[in-house]
Length: 140
Image 1 (tube, rainbow, N blue to C red):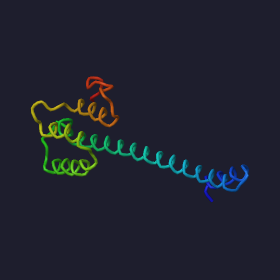
Image 2: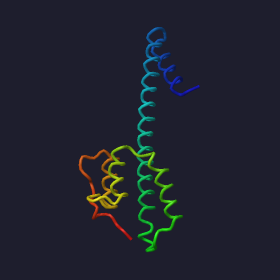
Image 3: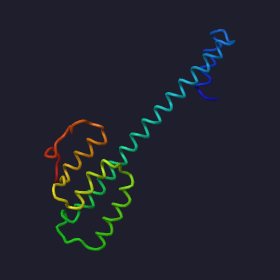
Image 4: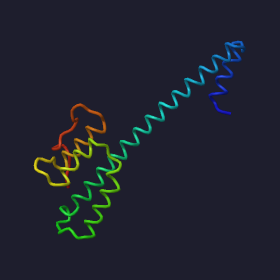
């Protein structure tokens, strides 16, 4: 037995049963169902945000790897970068893709890696303005 059914049944019994109790039970069940649905929707949105942030971080991590290692990129590294890109790009919405493509293509005027992180944060958190600056981020 679900707790919501038990709870609404007990309240209905105390309020005299009959039509009033049945209506109260139906109302309480409906409210609990709505609250569960809203909570599930919020959890799903949070998970999507997490997945998108991990996707951007993985793509950027592979993209800057050769720079950090100070070595020319090998075909194996290029393949790993491409598969990381393919795997993760599917998780991103259009706003993030529009920010990421110019950076990866070394396009003129594209944002830097730290600015990409700032913009990703802005998009995922639904901020009007970024709450951090690219200069606030650490690079080792």
